Image (cartoon, rainbow, N blue to C red; front, side, top):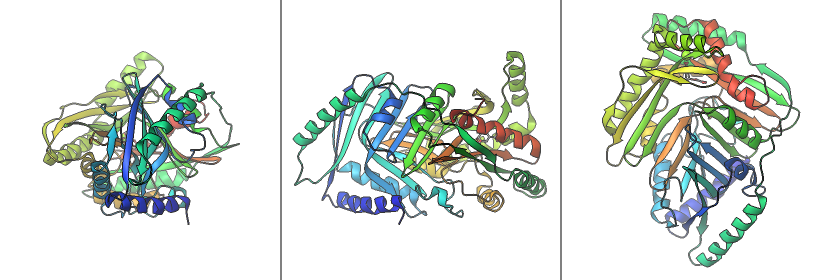
Length: 465
Ligand SMILES: C=C(O[C@@H]1C=C(C(=O)O)C=C[C@H]1O)C(=O)O
Ligand SMILES: [Mg+2]
């Protein structure tokens, strides 16, 4: 049996005991002195590889880093996966004993992700994650506006362990942690090969889809491809994260580990953020390269803002997100025109959408209604997904899927896992896709995906960022 499945079965027994109150969750949060998030990822506890996550917000003011798992949710039935995880989480939090948490992103928190398409053919490379994969971390560092907090989560047998021993444990843990503090030495490993998979077939698939878009009511399909990299030895995840956070300011940086797999990247695209009742979603679609020459860069941006093909590609996303949020939010504000979002490698059309959640609408409900937006799937969604399954001929796994967190108060944020890759031992698989519309030119789309590989390629020791 696979390692993640084994873990999941053990944890599903604990979840049952939590639901019947034979066990409870105890969560303790305490402020701590500043501690570097990447160092915490690397050294938060020894031997927790395979049970770690990392999150940096796009504006650099919020970090979450988890090491060790107090509880693992995976292998949920794919049909109601958003609802099921929400229900489990609600039950557990309702009976939990929570101390010291007064700030967003501290206390009990779930971190994880949903696969892009549970109904696609499955490939071995994604078997560590399945279609729903979330952790309640054992130890978690939260950094909010420069303030640092440590949260400790423990599933307790009410009759057995007592809280005094937990306080003692956390005190000892903090002393050990401070002794482990050091800087992360960047340990770059060498690539032995780097291959774009099935490039000619991919261009042919783009041509076929564009012809279909011209002759049917299908408006947009996002087609992705992959690149396989081999290294002399297994890359250090902390090093890759350090590169991503240094070199991709303005993007979210994330990592999610399971067994010997790590899915990570620097995504510029938020799916949805919920803070209290406040909701923020972003439409990101339509792309142009950057130029080192400021004048040319500005020209490329202006051109993008005025380009009919890219504006159409973008507008389809705005329409869908607006319709998806409309029934569950009030006060929706949708700007009429997109603005530019510039990352080091690429610039995009960007429209933020804000609103207020109606009573009882959880972040998981929002993710369910939004995913997949036409920035990653297409229009209409069902038809686009069918074409993706048939033409892409790969399992996207978590690539382009919702990745994120929710705290016990129901706040949270999900991004889409793009500009990303899956590291397994000495290999990495990188993913990049692009939105096809009737006016797409296959060679231009090939170049667009090549640019989208670059942030991860650079973080892994390749040349350009
Ligand atoms: C699919 C990806 O990116 C998406 C596609 C875009 C486009 O085609 O213009 C732009 C941003 C993303 O929504 C990717 O990076 O893999
Ligand atoms: Mg595009």
